[in-house]
Image (cartoon, rainbow, N blue to C red; front, side):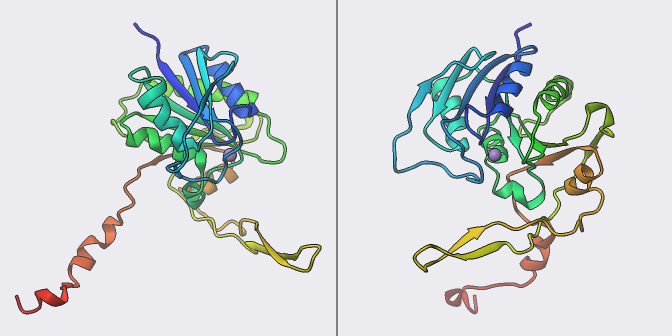
Amino acid sequence: MNNLRILVTNDDGIMAPGLRSLVTELSQIADVVVAAPDRERSATGHAITMFQPLRAKDMEVPGAQAAYAISGTPADCVKLAIDALFPGQIDLIVSGINRGANLGTDVLYSGTVSAALEGVMLGLPAIAFSLAEYMDPVFEPIASLAKDLVQALWQKPWPPDTLLNVNVPQLEVAALRGVKVTTLGHLRYNNPILTRQDPWGGTYYWLAGQAPEDNNVEPTDVWAVNNGYVSLTPIHFDLTDYRLLDTIAGWDLQLPNNRGR
Ligand code: MN
């Protein structure tokens, strides 16, 4: 049987320890190639580069059979990997391990999740891994857990366009309470904008803010991570609100020039 072939990417950049740990671990169970941004690209969401060329620089990443540092966004990296750098050579995309959680509505800002979503849009299954610790992350135990999870998940009957968003709290692995299948929660930040003065008296703004007191309940991803579970949320790019289709169809909207027809 051929080896599983995994593309590893991220949004923290190709030098990030989270990616390096993930590649080291996954290379024990799969043929791993890497296409990741040449610098940190966190919070770039699903942006792509349209009005500049992209460069892919050959890199050495321990455990990877090939690796490229790309002068673009996470979504650019996945597009380039699948259509140009490793065409027909990838079975699964694994994005991460991100420094910091990607939970709830934050997934819309996340380059980590967007890279995985780009893979799904191009027809490949994908998993995004994030460690829910920003200030003092320790990636190795989580990378080992990610390897075990990838191995277990790959045996399952995945629908073709599956994206799994995995968030892991930073606990001793033995202290994790298990895997919860979750929904996306809602993170609304308190004091989201700092307003300050620069040395010359001009005003500047800094996007910041803390997540509010936890108002996310089971079965959300936020709740799961706050309660010591590994959170696993299936995500799809179809943002249609199916709950509203019938209601809005019932509004019987008409264009002015269709009046009376
Ligand atoms: Mn990041």
